[in-house]
Length: 190
Image 1 (cartoon, helix red, strand yellow):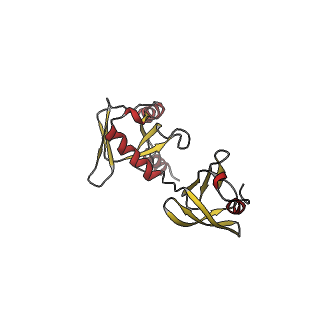
Image 2: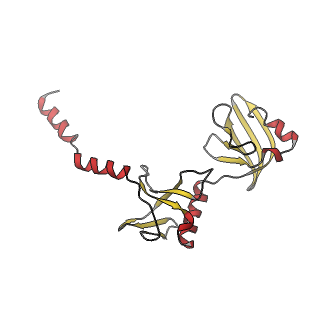
Image 3: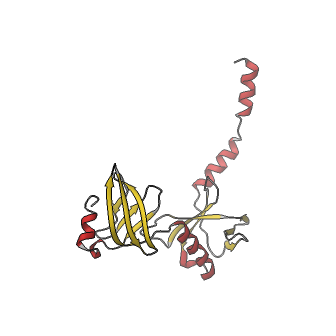
């Protein structure tokens, strides 16, 4: 590569060191979203927008930091793009006004949709995959999980989380409430 092309390449790769430092500092600063500094609203398209500390976000993403143990605390509000940069955290959902909290709860339900398995009809193991046929709180469902890894995880002595190959989650709220025949079908996982 000649010197002129090398110089051109260096110029293309220049970056603003101060801007990079500022962005790093912002990422390390935890900002709390409260009724005093933020206002959530619905967009015409049905999404949730946020006005926070003088800045407008046309669409936000809602993420639970403790989805299984504390779903109403420390809720991360992020920009709705592929980077999902955190805007701030809601310490307790109940600290927001009811209409604001309801909007966030709706977004949580959409992101963390998790049907509860009420009956295990069949589970077949073939070629390293398990093919499930179940009844859920939303009706009959068939899905596939891998046999290894974290497809089936015991969250407690009775509660089980199942993740299919597409990343969808299902819950068995009380393993002990299943019939002996249903429990036997799950022997390969438990």
